[in-house]
Length: 615
Image (cartoon, rainbow, N blue to C red; front, side, top):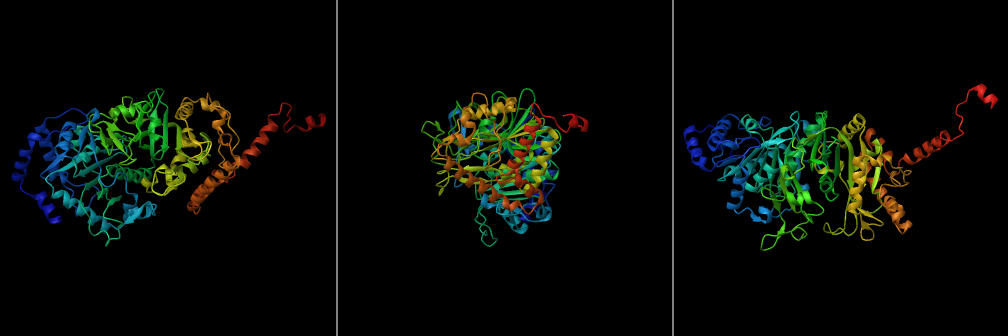
């Protein structure tokens, strides 16, 4: 394969020119900027292919000249991609002129088949364990070559060249080579599309290849299955085999950015972000099912992005050029912006449709993880630059199925770091096989599957942002109240939106906060607008106080046990005092006692000797 690929790059120009002349008639490209003629694009792509065929982070021993593939289609226009997907039978047209595809065996990510190459700088930087699973460089090369060899043997391959990151100071040039045309469409939706000038001088820093190749030697090389999703941080390479789930490509690039950006002193985040008309930026952290996408789809604010962001010295910036939203239970009343975004040029994944092509978003028989990808401009109130200023408010979203966390709590800096690293939410019965009661999930920074570095690295960066920009941090529970799942009820979305509005407009700052609760040390507003005060205090929402206390102790114990893995590091160990069982309650009581004395109307404090004598 290596010899064949090298021969391809040194073949005579005449036969290659003939091959490309043959393709000119059906080759066209649409860029983010002005359009170009088909002939000009082909000629410039040919010239580019002769001089820029390898990633600058890749050793020459691994051929990367996919632009030299005789059937290469590069940065296709939306219309051409649509025709290609339909002509190849990869998808079909459903309502709103949208394309529907099926992702095959896997309808979600394969976290147990996700690997990082253990070599070079990554060996000492990555937080190795059950999430960041090491793979030998030699094994990675074999999987990569297996995938690449299949791509070279195909009649056509699809190459998307673009960027990850809206900030030009830290963005990375990404190339994604795919076997499927709809994967090319997905990348065009999700990554940042280049201008024609940027494409002319494009040199990939990250290269991800994706094919249906089967790596038959997986057992001999210690892999879990023939499915392999792996990245090499040092060489800027990624490979996806054995799964057609498109999210693996974007998450591969995101994982690399979560590795690279913090090493530059830039905070990377699994979050959505919006900015108000006055320029106030808000960030929403949250795992799947917590309402991150729903609550950030706000008609009164501008959407920066819905999933992946960075935070540097200039402010918050999106890493993507599109959105990848869950479609299950999509409702035009509750989520009008997302529902309206599902139109031509969007791609639906695994959504159930009837004979007339009408989508049934309530039907989760194929999967609960139905998805839709669409370019950012499908959201009319998106922020076109993908950037905004420093965050004023940060909201941690958790779906507490145990029903004991307050609907909203104001966090101290130490609590903010503790809850960022904990990344708590809960799975409920029925969401996964074998889950019969609420199950706590702790995911570092609300995105542990994509955070390659030790949690301390992200926590330190977050602390610096909070302190530099006087950021308000809140924990918002979008889960259950009045009892655990099966007994209590789900938080009213109207109340949750009212809470978020109070945070964003600043009115929550005028609310009186409770004393820290004895279990989680959280302080919450005792009254907030028109929201029922009994809802704001989870203890009052429960009819059975003994059951409430027992459930609190159960969840607090889970928090504490999860934190034990961080106690070896002094910085992390010190944060444990901000969590359940910490010292905030005692400190609060002392502070309140001091406040009571000094605020007494008749208080005489630290009197002078003469004044005391007279008194």
